[in-house]
Image (cartoon, rainbow over all chains, first blue to last red; front, side):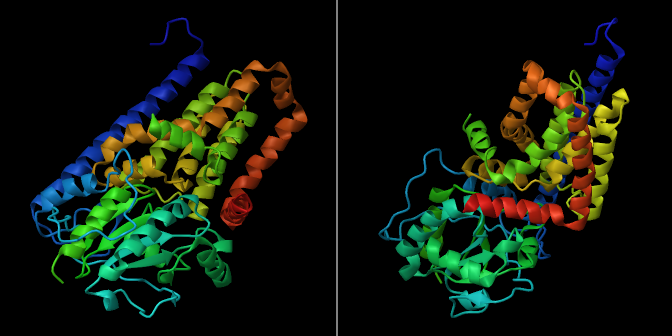
Length: 250
Length: 192
């Protein structure tokens, strides 16, 4: 690797890089152990009802657990080419594989500051509906990119029992002002209920650390988490999930 | 490939400014001939700390005081005249990786979502993505390495002092919350 006559400085640099690579390998090993632990927990049928962290989000299930973990990763992978969301509602009675249960119960809305354009004041009041919960903030570029798809899916399936709840968790101070949020909702065409999560407590409660904008969950009619995706994309998978959950018996 | 393209696009957005700023300060603090290793170590630190939380390891560097302390230590080491000071770039990279809020486009979103279930599988995609985000930093490095005029500018005592002042101010700004406000202001301005 390093020649005998190499300058000491180069040798030191090589050692530093080697140490970093070593750390990376150790980290990978740790992560494999963590993954193995998770699989062991899943195989044991653990029912995790504690507040979720990112690391346990796809583990805390009580049914078909191992398959759930695997499916959780595959369900939310965006297709290579995104099919546009149907703007007219298709029949929701087609047999579609039921989306896996990622959590038996969704985490609570923690210390929120209120709701905007909503008749309800809790997620529990939406039981019986399929609910898309979307963490966003109006200054977030990727959150804005998701909005047209969210609008389409809302228009297509609202009448059939779909509701959307946007949880506005501001990243920066200027995104905390309610007037600015209302103005942005108007400008961006956000017509669904929005929860004000000014101090990002709900954001942390649901996602743990790290937490990302945007992040999309889907709750079934009984409040179980059936879909989880970070960032843009997975629009086809999201629509498939919504269609499948709408077809489930209330 | 599409992940790299998404990273390149993201490199121009405010979400990546913090990484560019840190890389720029590091390049300014070291002499010609040492900058490649500084940038490389910064990159490794950034990748490691951006990825570790997916594996359930959180070093809490996103807390103001802890983050400021690590950042200050890294910058102080890098600013030092001794040769091994380049290693400070790892700490600066660790801070940058831990506090970085990436623009999560479709490709990175897919990597992160899968990474929650299988963290090991996210290491290489994350490394590729961060490499894409650091392309502007690499271009500045190349400019400093190839362009004699720019290299001379970086070597000027006043410019070097300027970088040192910035290296002192950034950890202070992180500790007081001013850094976060500044980042927010940049984001707001770029959204206009």
